[in-house]
Amino acid sequence: MKDSRRNFLKKSVLAGAGALMIPELAKAIVHEQTAVNAPKITLKKEAVILLQGDSITDSGRDKENNISNSFPMLGNGYSLFIASQLLANEASKQLKIYNRGISGNKVYQLRERWEIECLAIQPDVLSILIGVNDYWHTLSGGYKGTARVYEDDYRALLKYTKEKLPQVQLVIGEPFALREGAAIEDVRWFPAFDEYRRIAKKLAGEFNAVFVPYQAGFDAAAKLAPTRYWSYDGVHPDLPGRQLMANLWLEATGLK
Image (cartoon, rainbow, N blue to C red; front, side):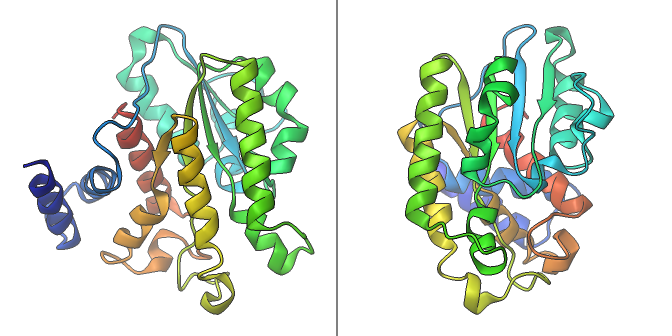
């Protein structure tokens, strides 16, 4: 019955049915990609939520602003969309939401700033989206990392985080790249980049983290509208892509 429901949702969304396209798309993809016993996030009163990553998370945030829930600090990307919905839906909990993404970051650069920009914040929920630069910069930035380096660095970061914050609830976003985006050359990106996606999902399982299937979401979205509707360059989402990411995150975490 559950599989039939998943198939119905997916077919309906990909046929373009219904006015709530993005929410229904997110629901269908998460249901298709997520195991029945997958972890979900629970929020206590005054819970601290931290979103970490690269430019996709950064999205023009003011790095001099440290005030939780503020527009300048959250930037104008999926973090803002997530925060807006959570703060509206969970007003009684008085959540504190922070964005600490930095454009260009790879996993090792997260580690370099982890004490100040993660551990010091003491998050109850830590969401990480990292990986596209770990591959992209091997093509264009002179970076010598490999998929193995990405996996080892990421695993070490997650292990260290759990040692220091044993009660933290983890959310791991799937790195993604959209075929036909202006910055994506299929022959150079695929299938090599797929290994980074596989690693992120593997680590989510190892650390009992919520996994957000961004690549699957964008792949399905590209059947409804052209790739460049969602992201011109194939890496940084435009407005509908940011909303899709937020819906996928909220659906996967169970906080929709």
